[in-house]
Length: 287
Image (cartoon, rainbow, N blue to C red; front, side, top):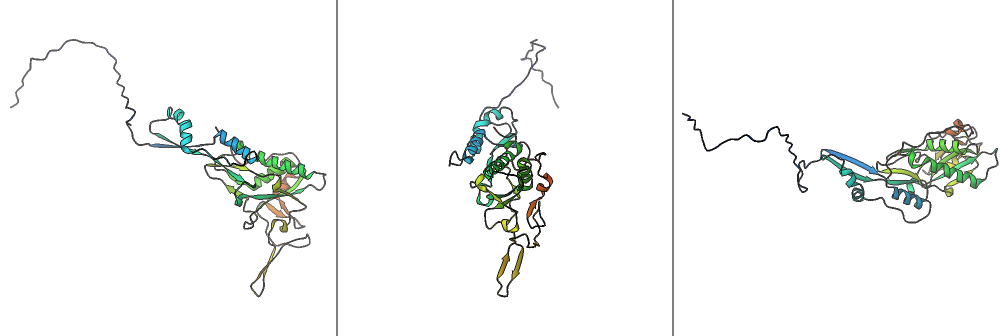
C-alpha cells in the first residue's frame, strides 16, 4: 500500500514574474553540432591575375606559362568571406579554372592548326593587313565575355564570324590540323572541361593565303586504288579539270571547279553587314 508522506522542510515564496527568457547555445570552436555536410557547393573561379598573366604569355611578353592557383590558395583567399554567409551544413569546394589554348604554337600539338584563306580576287588587298584583321577577329571571337567554363567550340561559328567581320575582303577560310596524323575536320568541334575556358593563341604565322581551297590544299584523298602488290596508291585533285567523288566535310561544299567553299561564305554574300553568334554565354566567373 502506498503512503503519502508530506515533507515540511521546503517552503516557497513569490519571486519575479512576467520574464521573457531566451536560451542561446553556441558550440565551442573545437566542436561541431552537425559533423556532416549535407550540401556540397562546387565553385569554379578564374582569377583576374591569372587571366592577365596568361594573356601576357600568349602575347609573347614572357616565356613562362602561368600556373592556375591551387584549391587551397582559393580557399585561403575567398574562404573567410564565403564562410561567414554559408550555412553550417554547406561545404564549399574551390576549383581553379585554367585556359585551354587553341590553334597557335603554344597550344597542345593536337590542337595546333593553320588557317588557309582565299582573298577576294576583285579587290586589291594587302596580305599582311588581311592576316592582322583575321587574327583580330579570332581574338574578338574568343573574348572571355563570350565563353563559359566547359563550352564547346564549333568551327562553323568561327568561320561565319571571321567572314562577316573581314568582309568583303575575304572569300573563303578553312582550318587545317598541323599534325599529319590528324584528318581534315578533326578540329571542327573542340570540347573544354568544366574547369577550362577556351582561348586562341593563333598568330599571323598561322595564316596562309592561297588562291583556292582545293582537295590537295587540305589533304583530302579523292581517288584510292589498290595495286596487285597490295600497295595503296593515293592521288589528289590538283586542277579544276579533275573530278572528285569525295564528300565535302560538314559545313563545306565543293564548287563546280573543284574548290572547297564554306557554307557560311555563301550565306555572307561578301557583304560587311550582318552579325554572327559567338562561342558561348557570359562567364561571370572572373575575379
